Amino acid sequence: ITEMPDLGTVCSSQSPFKLMALPSEPEGKWYINGDSLIGDTLYPDSLSAGVFDVVYVYTNIDGCSDSDTSSLIINDVLDVKIDSILSNCDNQGIDTLEASPQGGQWYINNDSIYSAVFNTDSLGEGSHLVKYVYSNGSGCSDSDSVTVTINKAPTVDLGPDTFFCAGSSIELNAGSGFSDYKWTPIGSGSTNIVDSSGDISVVVIDNNGGLD
Image: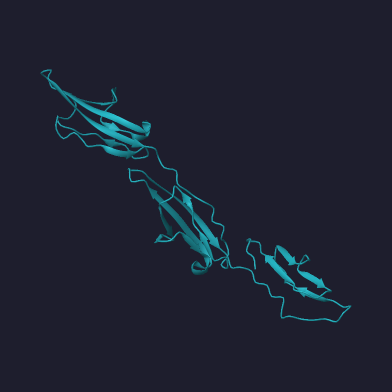
């Protein structure tokens, strides 16, 4: 037997491939761990992860035969997952990108990035494709991708510092159109009637979950 293939390591998700050796079929026959293979095509996804002996046996018309063996290692298919990316507004700064398994390559809008960060400031408004590719060095690779939409953050302005006379009050207006208003120290809704001195602040949240 000559030209027996060096099969090495493949991933269980790899496409089927033909086994070749000389002399070739029809007199030759392939076996995987002692089980006869129909034809000469190997389907990695039909085998569990592990080490397999691939044997080729050739018998000529005179009844003389010979065989040769090669080892095949099949690795489990990878399952790559990107963790949730929480940033969705252009004022949220940097979000650290995380995925499993660790040690892969990140891409944003098909451009590779060297640090695993999602920077809303530099990316700006719009939809951005985030992709993560991992290879284990043993013939297996997988990827995951998500589209993240960055929205323009809401803006709120209560105006300059102000004052009022004792016994009176002032109305502060955070503006309409927001889904929620969180006043400090107290208050609700788009307006707040203030009748005591102190610092007043408000956080507004829009329908996209953005805040200011």
